[in-house]
Amino acid sequence: MQEYLHQFSSEEEHQIIQEEMKSVKTEFIKEEREEMGDPEPCRIKHTEDTEEQKGLNGGLRGLERHEELIESNEEREVSESEKKPYKCSHCDKRFSRSSHLKTHERIHTGVKPFKCSHCDKRFSQLSSLKRHEMIHTGEKPHTCDQCGKNFTLKGDLTSHMRIHTGERPFTCDQCGKSFSYSSNLKLHMNNHTREKLYTCDQCGKTFLCASVLKQHLRVHTKEKPHSCHLCGKSFSLLQSLKIHQKIHTGVREYMCFECEKTFTTAGSLKKHERIHTGEKPYKCSHCDKRFSVSGNLKTHEMSHTGEKPYKCSHCDKRFSVSGNLKKHERIHTGEKLYTCDQCGKSFTLKGRLTSHMRVHTGERPFTCDQCGKSFSRSATLKTLFVPRLNYCLSEDYPFALPFGLNYREY
Image 1 (tube, rainbow, N blue to C red):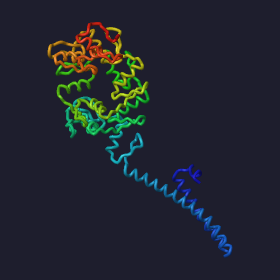
Image 2: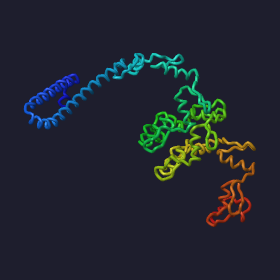
Image 3: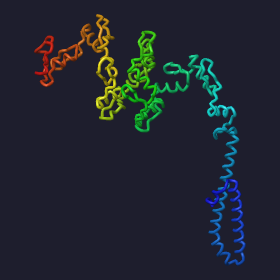
Image 4: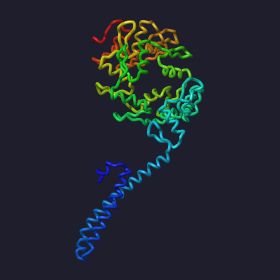
């Protein structure tokens, strides 16, 4: 029956069902009347007909249910069109109000009737225009009740609150790692697919986004378009400038709930919290070593690959870490950023200044566990102690070591 009915429209189907039901009922009554002549055969036949009747009744009930279903669907269609009488002429979407339909149809037509009074940007919805104009007016009506930070959009406040609550609602279905923002999850997913579209023509490094490649190219061009108006220091990234400016303002809005230490960025807080949790989410793909910071993993993996993407512009020396390249280039430029506030002596590296300061403070943090003698430099301790003999040479040579003498030969 179903296969037969499938060829027809719902109206024809409805008519066929009605006729079929009439036919079945007529045949059933006719058969009952024919069998009513002889009482005895009627009693015997009645038992046989009962089984047949059950089958007919079941068929009737099935047909009736099918008819009810058709009527229900028709009613539902009528109900839907009554509730949402406004149908889009471009797609099948329906709306309860004509104004909602008009707004929706702008998606298809591309009409943007709402123009910003401050710039030439246009919008399809008035609410979108109002949100945009807050950028020009500086209005930030949404305030965080934890740290007092203000936001233009309510959605931005909601995202920001996750810093305080620690909520990470976006989880990777590949490795289980969670994120505070959906955009971070999308970027992370590319680590599994290894989809890297944008390649640097200087060093061959690949990136997921064109904007990230653009930022990376500044490593090679040395371009630093963002300058601090307070101290003149320049940065290649705007975000780096914003973080730097917090040094001047003293703003440290991110606090660790474990030890109450404060930080200028959410990323710094996140890295710090791993000290308490012991979490090391970044695993080397070449060995079993794990890291708490992604940058440390990248640097470590270069020890396996031998990759050194950062080349000195003065000589042919290459480095795996950009920071090491910067330090090296100061040898060529003679730049000495770190100055002693006691005697005015300048140094290329911060570590050299730290060591030098011990001349003034008298600090000797490196102690020999054999003789108890302390030193201001770790290199001096290493030179005096002979691990092979488990012996300290400071007893034999209590004064400054002669230049070039290698006691490790003993």
